[in-house]
Length: 228
Image (cartoon, rainbow, N blue to C red; front, side):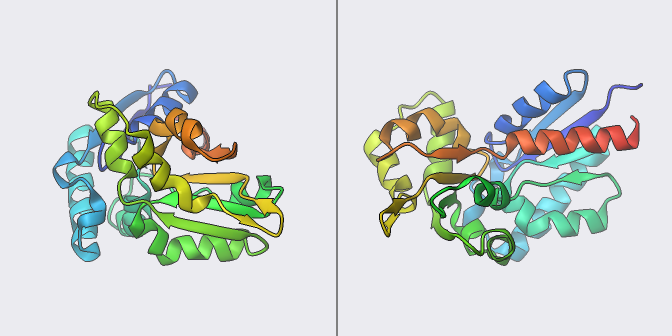
């Protein structure tokens, strides 16, 4: 069996959380990581222009890297451009979407928090996931404007301001009818980079759902199906 070539694409370095999970699942694979740092953060872009850019940049990477499979390790890019990418290119794609379904399965209080970028929070794709899988829950969506940038800064060696971080995550910690949020979806691949800091400043313990392990399982399933 030839070692598969896997291209992982993100707006910045958050996709490294996904790359780590894929490496654990597929230790023999060749991983190629690409970060669109020139366009970070994606939330500042006009959506049609961003889709055009993602399709063009990923296409160039496919031409150069010749991957067997592409992981779009970015919620924004996935919810916006995954359909266009699949229509344009024949290589299999694995996307990253907010983990609403597992959150709805794991919550005991019925109160779920979703931390994501403002664009992902407002996107119809996210609302459809909630209506489909978490209709019986109360979901608190929060478009965190600075979390991805804080995570990038941490990777560059900058200290995380706990007060700023606490303000960024506070809106998803809610109480209602003597119950409180017990599951928080990390709706951006940058956010797991701040998991230890979030646990330290959170008002109470919750289960955080990192999408990376599920993405890695999907990658393995597709590779086995293709018999690479």
